[in-house]
Length: 470
Image 1 (cartoon, one colour):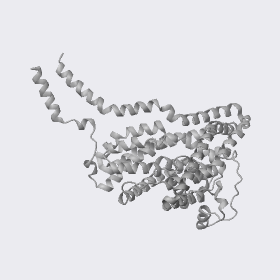
Image 2 (cartoon, one colour):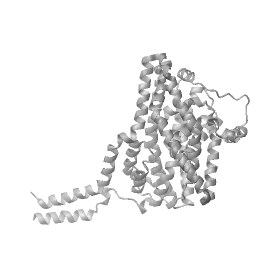
Image 3 (cartoon, rainbow, N blue to C red):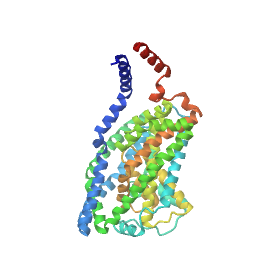
Image 4 (cartoon, rainbow, N blue to C red):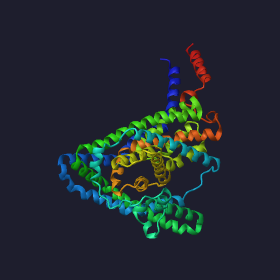
């Protein structure tokens, strides 16, 4: 046996093991924690499946479970106002300035806005060209909803509608789930005011932060009951109107997943190519696997931040840009959620037979989708529910439609998170391109394993082996 050659091979394998140890440990840890990270989504989807089965078996008798669903919705309605106020206020009040302001922030905002508009356009094209719920099924689902919201008796121009949406004439009305947008705006300004006052307002911020933690814990308690509540709600719907309701949700999930996968491969390839040509395309797809796996396994944009920053840096993105764009993107840039918001809006549009097939309607859907995500996505916990309430309020749908959006949000969570996370990495490449010019990728990019091997070293090893063999 040629032990010298074996020694060289062993050194090579040892080198590979050292390089990949961290990555292996991370991936192994993700596999070990799969159930922990994915548990809530699996349980919720499982409860919907069980509810559908119960509804199909019991038929109209499943309506006996309706109060259990109503109880869950009442819990959420009670918590929604303090949840919105405290989470938004404390989040904005505690914002820290990133390392690089000025051009970096302006560029980041520009890229986020443009890429978010692309996501909206994709959502609009795909949902305007395909009816998410049939008229027959829509009427059946609609008849299960009850609402005490009165229809407007007079037509108002867009300015008056805007004023009524963003403001109220009495402080007590702020504390109502019927005025969500006004509550969001007040919460933002309170947060900004606390931030501007500084040290003198630290006591108030501490009180609000403590109250926020208490409310978030109450939300956790409520979501312990969520599988029962949503399962009972779904069982009642399916029992009343049969399998066609299940078909509507399942069709929406399949269609959204197809659009998400196409967006992932086509749009992000385009972004990478625009950022750095063929090298950018290769760098993106050579390093995005970690972010992809983490986003799908955890279903959490926040939990994916460390891996996403690492992947962006491996693509060649400058450290300070990656460390600024990725965290900001986690809060304010979510391609998957924006497309999902368009799907939610259009599902309700078809359900309530609303007219948004005009220029003003398209602009309204676009604005609502952007506001619901770019604004409210900054909320660390509960942002999804707030976003859905904003959609309902701004589009003029009854609050009773919230369970429908909750179900849609649950079933599209995994593909939406995939786009949210990987879209931030692609955006960081575009930001780097604008900040540092077209040759940015040549300035700093972690080489792949093949690229990191020096050809001269290989020749030296070969010569050494030959001499030893002689």
